[in-house]
Length: 275
Image (cartoon, rainbow, N blue to C red):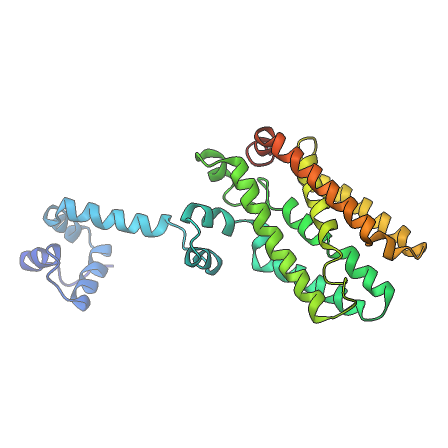
């Protein structure tokens, strides 16, 4: 398409100096897109330093990811920007995942009002939520910052612990809320906490030998088998009673000791060596 007018030297000078108003500048820019002659006339008049600054600003705007709502919230509570970015990218801290967890736990808590069988359903499902969240928090497949986490000088063990604590805190808060809203016996809201910690810590401890997702799946199947056996034997109180709680606490402590003892290799395998 041809055009009936071209930029004169005065307009070239004013545009290059940034002395034109927005409407005229937009007209000039629309014209030079289609007019090679005016582009050649304008190019020598543009200050190279100013042009470089403009392009650097554009590249920075395009290349720098925008912080989402969760990441901005982390900034407000004092979390360092690098840690906030890695936390915000955690798959099991996304709204979709947390919403699904909340829906499942709400259903289980609602079922708990139907009697002992419903209470067993909630007590069985609730410990599995943090286990699944921690298992999905690591690895190349679901983590958009995986390469950044591996390539940057950020402690892999620290990332492992920060994400684990964050996932535990959010899922446990959702489960406790569900249990309190659908009020049951006094022990109902907390009886599942130590089983959850034991299963989560054991998942991390086993991750030295098997992928976290597989470790979590195996432990979850084992936990469901034990819960089903207790239900059939009407031994639900024993499964969540004082003796069992002490056993869960002991398992959780032993698993935590194992995680700390093998922290360097474990963090490398989970965070830096996953494929």
